[in-house]
Length: 271
Ligand code: 15L
Image (cartoon, rainbow, N blue to C red; front, side, top):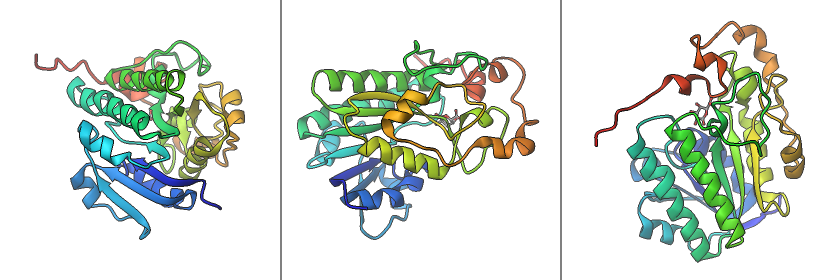
């Protein structure tokens, strides 16, 4: 594979998805920088030709420096689960604003943004959702990802930075319950999807659900996948016998697309 980018940046590189993706992104760039908070980054091993650069996304000046000379960003950084507002505000909202503002000032051309299925997690599981249907976030985390999609749209419309927002489903080695038979994405499919999102021509602003070829999917994936050239190799149905009896608790967690996140909160954050 010839390098598509001179200088590619992966944020959230010490997280589960960042660690999984880093080796597969190496062939795409002459220089791959990987970033995360100093402590988790220091504990993580990366391929030899990858440079690790610690950075707190909430630190405006540090993010501006981090993006100097960068052509494209795979943004996996931030809080990845439902939880109280303040940490999500800092990492997923202030951090993302810093990222896009620095991208604008540094001439970054494209961002692949790890959005989430939780942007539409309050839809019933019985309904098929298209990326252009109205958002129905299922908590603070889903709401922050909706902000992410909003800032991506703004920076495309005003400043010409392309973004593919990947509403990633359940990115785990194998599906663990019945819901995941709809939402699962395998490690190799996730890598293919991220590569497609980095290299597909003329994406402008695009939202795509990130799952494998799951027969029970909740989403209408056809148009966005075609635009990206994404052809998933795996499907959760292969695991149906093992996990379809594993159910989330009765009620919203079982009925709505966001699953277990519908069982978390409210948080009664301190004022
Ligand atoms: C996500 O967006 C989360 O980052 C992850 O922790 C899972 O909960 C996943 O969605 C999911 O919905 O299974």
